[in-house]
Length: 278
Ligand SMILES: [Zn+2]
Image (tube, rainbow, N blue to C red; front, side, top):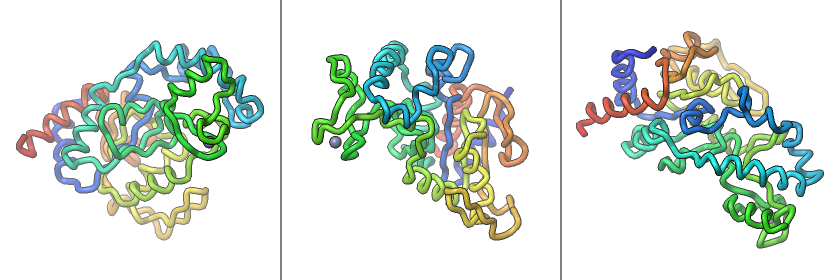
């Protein structure tokens, strides 16, 4: 469990840093009632992840959208809202104390909370994209078309097939998201890791890249070429806010604040505001 000293220490680090980025994962959204897809009650106990691969989508987009209608009803019935952790990150951006959020989540809750700089590794389920022309539309529009029997739903501009703008299994992560997150990780002086064990590539690499800063001559396509030996002292500070220790703890992160992000982040924010004179 976290201590008040840790909260104060994190707030001081935030006030003292200039280029702060947050890396977030499923743990920040479970507190908004979004199920962890892989948990014991997760969606993958009801649906087969193999049906949600990119190649299956391309083979039979109509089937995908039929499943999506059922799933969509399930997800919409949860009406997820941003929680206090999302809101605290939005306020940090407002205060000039957060350059961007890099997220592995597809729920779009950081934007709903008010963050404007959000890099989404896995896309966003609130949008759909035309696979022919690349135009993006709100997800509701595609669901409306699908529920009116338009299967698969098609683009208003070019009649191309619409696909959720979330990255499906086996689908490559968008290059702009990789490039920009790498750039942010290399240039930040403080990274706040929230609700992720950061074991899955590419999120797993980012705290290490931040920590070592310019130690990597990096390309996100698998060719990491260390220019010199790791020197963690020269890199960014990495603060972890997680429910339990992770593979980063004690190795890459400077310290772990253990507990619920929805409790810890608002406390840190309050202390940051106090230090900044609000
Ligand atoms: Zn189109």
